[in-house]
Length: 70
Image (cartoon, rainbow, N blue to C red; front, side, top):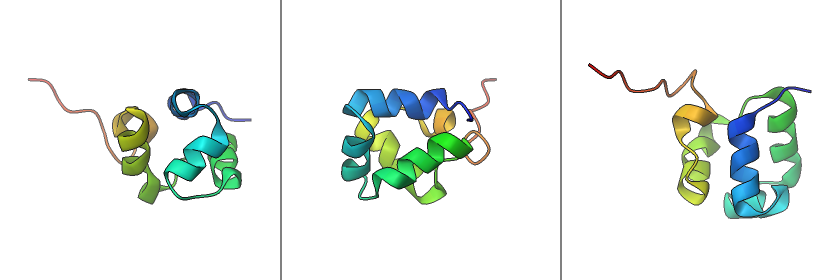
């Protein structure tokens, strides 16, 4: 099983996989799959950020790299 600390934090913030899934209009099975694979669906990253406060950079650093600080 792949660890995904940012997604786990979002799940904990909302109170469980089902509540996160409901908040972003997807299924609990999708959330479980993202935990297993370590990859959140790209079209759900911004929604998860909005409902949980977990940054897009944490959720998908491959798509949303951290801002460069000069």
